[in-house]
Length: 188
Image (cartoon, rainbow, N blue to C red; front, side, top):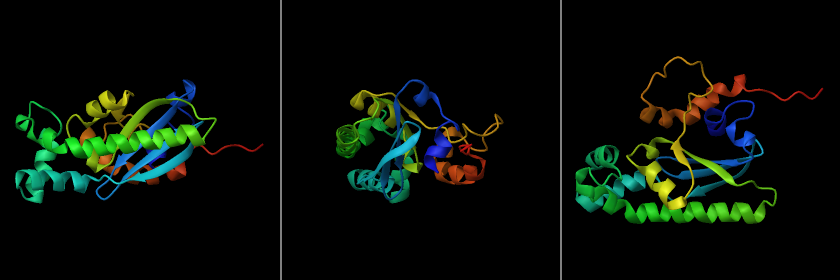
């Protein structure tokens, strides 16, 4: 459902450039990494980092309630100019763990899937990805193109009902709704 929502139906830019797409779904209780290569999901793995874990790290580090920590995560994120950079400092260990696990998963994929193509893009989705500069941080540390996914990419060009930052929280639901509209292969 996530890949269906974020990648253009019937093939897309990654297949045209002979690269694979990596989707990182930062959910409340876990993070999923999905590799789409040759227009098929080839590999998935759960990573031990979660949006709730990020919020808890902020709450503990700054002695905030969970609600206050969630608000600080969204408003300040990894931006060194926001909240005097304290959120970014607290999240350093969490982000290092996430980057390390992503690298491990991508190395495993390359080593165990001999026909794999180079990663062309990393897309973020899930409510846990709704904090400032996570995409810039991952792009800088992974040395890959990283951006927030657009789960509205396969829908009419009318404006999405939510702000782009909130929309990524509904990626799975949008992908499930698109199930009946996917291009089905012809076997003639």
